[in-house]
Image (cartoon, rainbow, N blue to C red; front, side):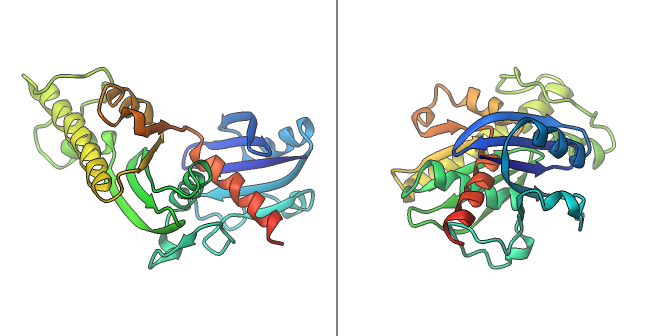
Length: 249
């Protein structure tokens, strides 16, 4: 029997079907959630369903559909296999929580820093004893570019160019790209170095929409051997939560 794992985002649903720890089907969908579930139910022998959402929807799917599965609506009250020490757990983004759970499942009994490079960039650390205390949230690449245009009178709206690799710009567009891209690379490097000072055996996991860009840039760095690019980290974390419910009920 399989687990159906769904991460509902602002613009799309990230969906995976797991057979134990192995992803046997994965898709990013723009369809209504109900339709996705019905389609996958017809294709796979799904036993459990977990849904995590960044939206404030009180009812994500028709209640009648949930009776077909062991259904978990992931929230801050769900039983999890880590020690969440966040002071305001109800305000903690569920994607951040799922990511550190996923990190711990990949690297058990190790210190792990997760870097989720999406609309915002989040840095979250979980220690070798599975204690999570919190992290940092920073504006992402496109957010920074849009902010400079929005909050100034003359700076243009510049679009992200992943191949940009200049140390400095020679016009407004390239200067803005240089500031944002190099600034973020220095930021990420600073977070990594700071954690490595405290935890020399640190593991680092990259995920999120812009993770490939950062992974490429750090391929030839001194950190390359520490970094794992795991695009399905949040989904793996949610699947870990499903298995944890089975083991502790």
